[in-house]
Length: 103
Image (tube, rainbow, N blue to C red):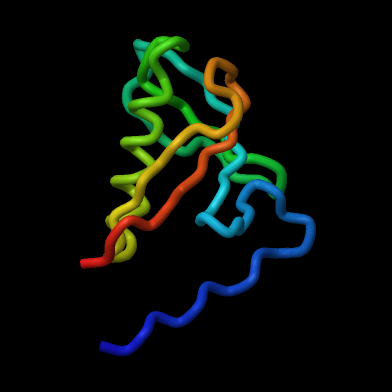
């Protein structure tokens, strides 16, 4: 099978998505609410990605990572591991996405 084409470069000044040696880091601003209809992306800017997470503040990391892993894996054929690297208990977070396998 042919190798996938590399992704296009990010726009100059974009800090919401950053390539790092381990994978991709996403800068997120999360609004958490147990009454939210669903977890979703609300807005994307050069500096951050706004997320609405259906969970209590203290329980948001797991559903957030599940949503990102499932949504982004559905776009390609890679299975992703997602972890919070900064902002474990804060609304502003940095998430690391690492490809763990390709179907």
